[in-house]
Image 1 (spheres, rainbow, N blue to C red):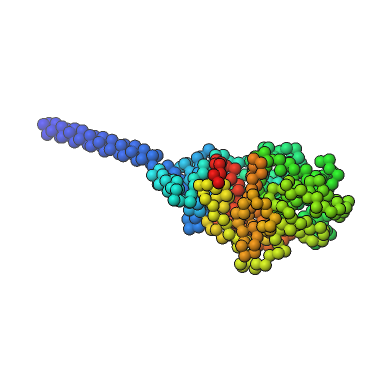
Image 2 (cartoon, rainbow, N blue to C red):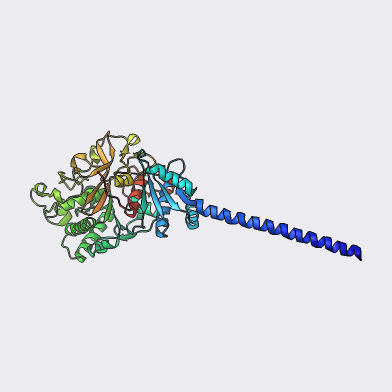
Length: 444
């Protein structure tokens, strides 16, 4: 009996000691866990999406990740000239998950790491700047209904990057729908009413006949007697949108034909096969270059048999072989010239050239107040230009498709899955994010 009591006492003593030890271990583990998560939330609190060539697997989808962050009110910064124009975000599980799903490279940073990067960027000795991105811009693509999506590089870029957009055309523009959007892209359109100057090669083609018929029907339904008059009305609405503070991006023939239409607001420049009546005599001398956005003193191509609008385009004057066709992006002071720095962010300053109906711009026809952000010095041409009109901005980008050197009617679409790091397409997506940036006044 005594032996049993002694065993019970010993057991109780050991049990109490075990409980105390377990309690101490539990408290220690609890404290460690609390401090660990406090430390994590205090330090590992940023996501960096790098945009340098070595670290980023998919540059194009990185823009879609940034748009996703803005849609979900996740704080975002664009780190201009830092590792190819990287993006910095507040750490969110949803954002990390999206990066993994979309195949976008990212890095987890501590607060100290992020602060060190921002301190480096803010240094006066560094040509870098951090720009806050405030909201996801609402995007409109100006394109005819039923148009194949691969006919437009911007539509392809937005789709691949998973950035939402809405398609609008003449009816919506003339009914003042542009006020609903922050950013407008112009499809490869002819605002002069000459049907893209395709007359010589395609006037008997079924698609040309059908497009001409549809354009005439649309113009009539909208109350215009000629397609050229209806297209001018659309161009004037777009002009007012930009002047009022909108952001406009255009490529290929939408760039020069837009300005030509504005210059010819009071002049008929279309020949009878396009609008049913003769052009005005001496119409060249009647052009009003003060009305245009980017171009001046250009000479119109009068012949309907020539696949060209004016002297603005350099396509027929080019003497550079495909393997040597590159253009160079300009360098700007990130702290002083923030806007052009944003628009030229890339992981290389050398971008492959590509053709289009309007491939590049004659520097002699570019207004003095327009920035040339990309140029081919060998061929003496501008490829990528930007300017201010009223309270708004415009960017013109020569060429049709940055990854299809000489796109022709009926050619298959470009598969962007094969070009996820395309520098030429990055320039398009820079413009998409431009309206999201908190604007700083230009200091020069």
